[in-house]
Each structure stands twice: as structure tokens, then as C-alpha cells.
Picture 1 (cartoon, rainbow, N blue to C red):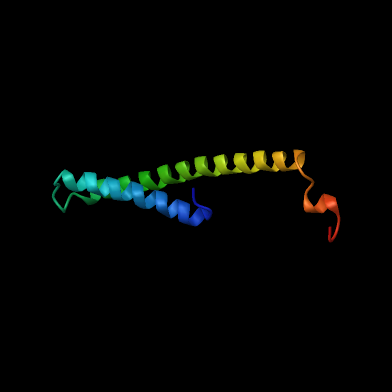
Picture 2: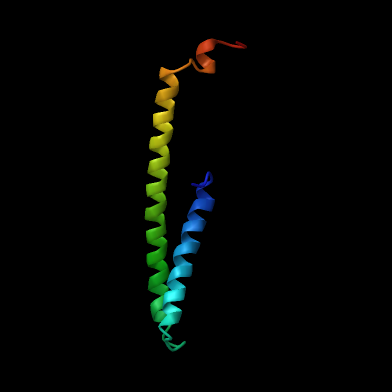
Length: 85
């Protein structure tokens, strides 16, 4: 998805937090009691976004391992061909 882990994490957090804030705003709570919902919600969103990011990270690592194995089976890499070849 994203090449940089930072952008991927920020993107996941922004999408989840925007959706959660939209849902909470639709509840039309009093502003004085909103912090009681927002603080645990954002902590939960942070934990959930880190978990989702770890899933993406595992998938990308598995993909890199698979492409690395396919490259070894296919043509020789630059290190196997020697210097300057």
C-alpha cells in the first residue's frame, strides 16, 4: 500500500479517527461530557491502528520474502554474477 511505514501509520490513524469523530458528532452529546468518550476512543483507535499496521507490515515482509525466493530461483543476482558483470 504505502512504502513508508510512517505515512501508512498516519493514514490509518487519520481514516479511523475521522470516522470515529463523525460517529460521535452524530450522537450530539453535550460538549462537557464529550471528553469522556473522546479520550478512550482515541486510545483505542491508536491501539487498533498499530494492530492494523502490523498486519500490513507482516504482509509486506511475506511478499518480500516470496519475491526474494523467486529471484534466487530465477536469474542470478548481481552478487552472483561478480563485480562489474
